Length: 420
Image (cartoon, rainbow, N blue to C red; front, side, top):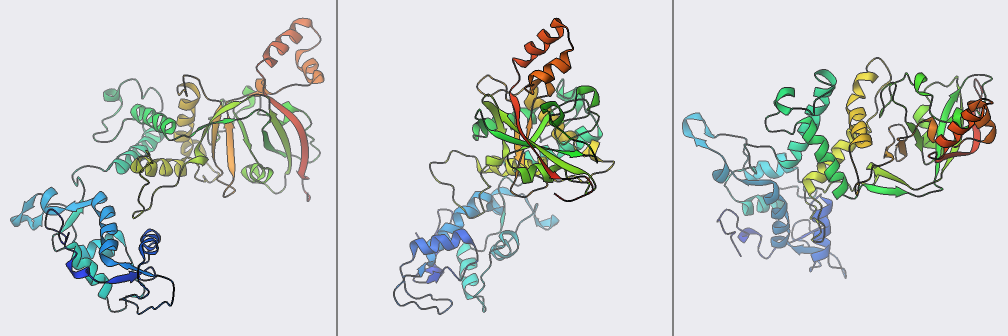
């Protein structure tokens, strides 16, 4: 077809021309060109090959580009109001040149005279473009804006009871209320395959800071503090709520707590004694690039995927230590509490969350919904904790039936005031 069905786009100017992958600086367009190459010569950069096909028909390249453009944009004449007295179209709009250069940012590194760009712009037509559904938020914008509103709301307006009545709590307009947003996050985490099993006998590493002369030996000493001593606000848990923070490698566990070089660091290796169900935010697929076409077999919603990546980045973002920690951690603490107490996977609760480390790029951190009662005790620890009476020993042994984190090794990474 020389024209699209609406008559906005014509491929006539591109007919008979071929372009190589070096002429357009976008990885997905370049992949398309390499896959569809059928010529040894490029009509735009004078590149010549002897045996390998390097250039694809420009008409096909433009059609490939249009698939992405039509997904995000439409013609202003079909979507925007027009008032000549008010300056024309009522809303943001761009001609084809502005759309390619300024909005999409497609670059042509070898097109020094602008010929390739001009042909593409001519094929896209003279009619201005605007965002699809310009008077409402796109799905990804809706979700991301809802999360931003959620963070502001729970930090500065309401922290409790916001799920009871949306009208009593706030008027969100187009965005999702806090309660609806949490349910939405849970639903898409389930549907995007972010729930996984941490198998029994997995090794998790928990680093602890130690003072000069202090030696940690037992599972209780390496584990989370007793509830009465949980006075520090953490990324996923507020003061008073005990959780088990760890990593699946020593380097990450150390990086997460190493904020005072004068203190020593000891690392306890814990073995899990049962399977654990986790929300794994590290296994999320990256968002699709603008020109990247989603495989036909994929059932993922690319807007939801974009939101989830933004959400995970926010949850795992580094927060500078200081007076604002107890405020800036509030959104992730509420999300964690919701997953700990409300969310279910296949009608069962989950045991924790795995998330990207804020301190060690590429590392994974874990927060398990476990306190000191989930630490497996040795006989001497049971005797010490339960006293000498049989009732005390019985109570401790009953608690131990649900314990599933066993300290199997301890090591010194750095001596207080010295080197490893």
